[in-house]
Image 1 (cartoon, rainbow, N blue to C red):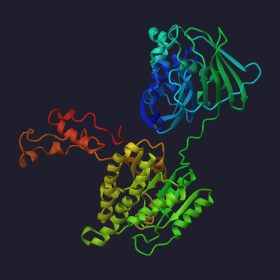
Image 2 (cartoon, helix red, strand yellow):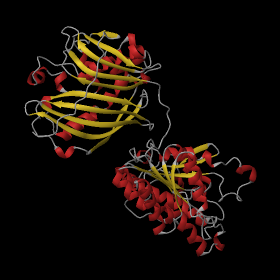
Image 3 (cartoon, rainbow, N blue to C red):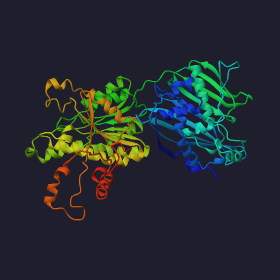
Image 4 (spheres, helix red, strand yellow):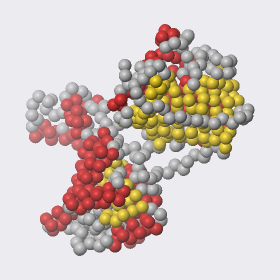
Length: 600
């Protein structure tokens, strides 16, 4: 066997693990908790031990083993670093993705190190923790790779500030493995002897959980959510039933070093431990390091989006042609320049762009402005728009085409070059702007309504094409005061329709934490809801073996029209599958597995 060099940097995941309070409690019992740690074991006000994060990434570690082609007969967990960004909720789904980052060569008869890093998010969109694991493979050294960098942890030359004693039971591995680490070394006597041990050994990560409990009890009793960093090296194996001591030295405000020793022999079984504790960080959506393009950002909604993105750390391209509400006129640089000046005055980063989204060249130039100024593009908000309202009979082809050119074609012209960059990056967030006029209709706005509904269709395909690349595409239907609505809505209502009410939903859809793709949200005045295309269950007419007559269809029209028991479809194939299934299954049971709008 030989390590697979091509695996370095190749993405692993996303891997999803659903869990409940029972999984958190089972893990706690597996690392020695009991009535003395009832908060970890009892669903009432349950708190999650931070090292439970390891149980969430067992699947990732197994993929690392398979991808690296490491010799499983000779592997041990070498080092583990955990950085916590938010407390782990007691239930939900954990979504993990990462990659093998390094192979290090210790020598032909000394083994190799496989290093992999992953990031885990909760299904609510929160970034929970970053895990870096080092796997020691005793049988894969001598491949000519680089040596591992040396890492030192200084221990004070004095007695520890805390010593926490515990004794894992002789059956501890049998309980711990139920949390997911089912490697034979910890349960199979024959496999353990083949690996050079007298009998199955403790999971290093089980002892790691004992140590985590000891550190919390000593440094932040009853507050596991305060753990920010938990790092260590596994140095020697431990047999079940052997007593241990976790020794802890405080080294500064919120910082400590620690090690766990075999209390019978004094051998250090976990070394170079580092723990950091501190206040729970403010749970704020941020865009640090991200680059956003907002079209039509010289006023109204676009200006509000641009200012809020910049306040939260994004670099922003403020695009605005500066034309009249109906799209006429030569344009002006003033609106975009004023917004850029506001952002810079507040300490943010922004550049102006004055191109017309209605042209292919304009769209390409907008995206190129982001690349030239900031080197990437992560977010596109297609917000630019014009109005040319007329009743349908009075609507000239010029007015029809002008509105579609800005709203629909403009979104295409900007999104297409941006989408190409996002695919190469493996990340992107795109927000289309529809309208209640498009979703539900509005007198005198046939052109506007058609363009706005067409954007939903564009989203529906881009959500599929972007799914593989972590590009999420959603649509906002804002109800807000802007220059497009200032003389349409009553004055007393305009005051209640501040664009600031819409911005929070748009920020979520633009963020790394966005949990959905292919969704439409109405937003305005502090009221938010989701809109969707719902398809009724329908009925087979004519038995499927003959073409139904007009009278047959008319007789079944009530059933055909019913939306009772209706559902959403994520893509065309899901709906077509239900059509086919209708000929072999009762109507009430058609399509039990259709995907939701989030793609899950």
